[in-house]
Structure formats: structure tokens, C-alpha cells
Length: 267
Image (cartoon, rainbow, N blue to C red; front, side, top):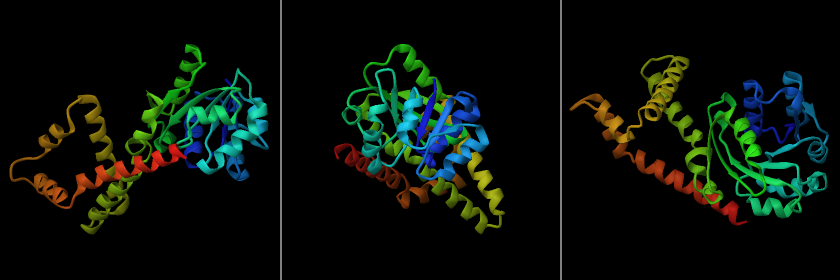
């Protein structure tokens, strides 16, 4: 399946790099174009992908067109590629809030549509990719798209209405984790630990904790309790986090993020 990326910025570039480095997408089967020619040229130099001069050229030559542009540019891009589409092509959009119905409308109903909510750890093939399929795709096509996405991490198939409700949980949450990592490292640096060491130790601890939650299936509250000894240092740290509103701040951050995502869906 010849695959083209319209937009190779932070998220589009992360997906493309993840697919290429995994081997799921050979460079000879990949196309890209971007408003920054340098970004597209970098993928050509490193992986041998083809670079299209514009989105319409890319759409003509690709079976799967991945739309990875900013929301305010999506309508114009889709309109520009509509004439290059047909019923055999698939448009996969990672654009926040852009519904299957709207994509179908903007492309004149000439193609099949898939929506995906990814996150940037796709760059290192550890992403969380939530996908919703529009009408008309065969089981084989769904399997092929899912396999391509799975090369960048874990895939979860969801109803489309849920995509705007998990934005704050998956798509945006790496930002919260990076803030936490930075803060943990800052504290360690304050206590005399070299910064590079502090970041590495904090990141591995977060990675191991997440893996433990996934592989044991235990409720996070129970796993937290298992670390907290009576009158110990960990429960003292938890007391401070609760006092400073750590839990509430995360809840409110996710809710606020989802509310903003819903605004895009309503526009």
C-alpha cells in the first residue's frame, strides 16, 4: 500500500519515522510533502521516501493518504486533493476534531475515511493510537491500516464519538508526563544529582511503573499502596502531593484538554 503523508511536523513526522524505522513502511512505498521543504527533504535523504510537490500530486500517487496538518489548514488541503481521490483510496486523518462526515463532505465522498488520535511516543514506536473506521473499508483494509499503525505502538479501535473524549488522556498526556519528569529531575539536581543522570533515572522509573501497571493488571491505587510503608518516606511524599492538589490538577487538566478538543469538533 503506497502511503503518503501530507504534513511531517511533530506528529506526522513522528508517525512517519516510526513506520519507516519499524520496517512496516518501506521508504520506496512512502511519499511525503510539507509546507517546509526541508522537513520533507530530510526524510528523502534518510529513508529514500519520495517527495511530492503538493498535496494533490501526493494524493494521485498514493493509496493511503495520511492528513497530518493543523486544523485550520485541513479544509483547504482536503479540497485541493478532492479531484485526485477515488473510491479505492483511503484518507486517514489525525486532525483534531475533524469528523469522518466533514472529511467526506470536503472530499466529495470520493474516498474511504479513517480517523486516528495518536501521540508523539509513536516516534519511538511506543505510541497510543486510537482509531475509528468510516464506512466502506473491507476487513482486509482495516487489518492493513491497523498493522501499519501498530508499528508505532499500541492500537485501540474506538467509536468516533470517543476520540474527542480521550484527547487529554492519550494524545496530549505525554506533555504532562514530560513536565513531571522535568520536575522530578529538578528536585534531584537540587539534591546534587547530575541532570542527565536525574532525567534518566526519572524516565526509567516512569517507564517501569507504567509497564508494571499494564502487565500486572492491578489497580493503580493498590500499586501505590504497595510502595507506601507505614510512617515511611513514600507516604510522606504522597501526603505532600495530595496537599498540593496533584491528583486534582491532573484530573482538571485532562477535562480541560477534552473540552478544548470538543470545541474543534463543534466548529
